Length: 167
Image (cartoon, rainbow, N blue to C red; front, side, top):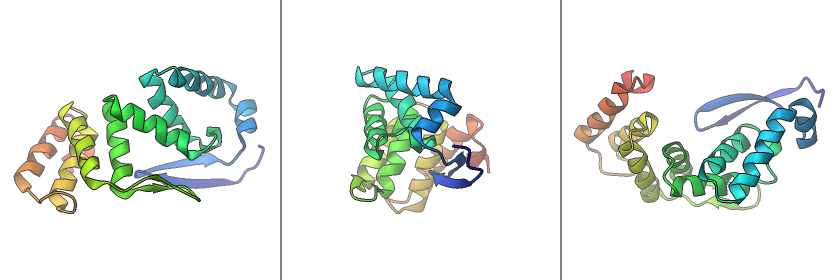
């Protein structure tokens, strides 16, 4: 709290500038955010799928709110399993690379499972998933390279004004 020091965190190609402060500092500086995350945590524990995703994304953006990294991963996984396209896409990215904390593996690398989540999210119409799936199909690293399928998913994403797909 009160520190002018800032650091840049990078996750899933999103760059976030966040102040480095403690959980208590967040409670003092941003009480509304702290309450929202606390309420989301309570609802997530009761099985509220939307709250699980909201909590996971807040814990990703504001690491000081997390008790530990497993809470973020667990809520993201649960949201993905319930079919929230944004969560499916984020979790698929995690599965493509794996995710470790300092001491343990939080998510084992599983490219096949990642493609499955991406495909479900893309089929639901989520433009970012369509774009990411097209990139994976075009690269040929995880699935057999198929320019026709990649082009199909790029066109789907582009139709929704996804800037990356347009490029």
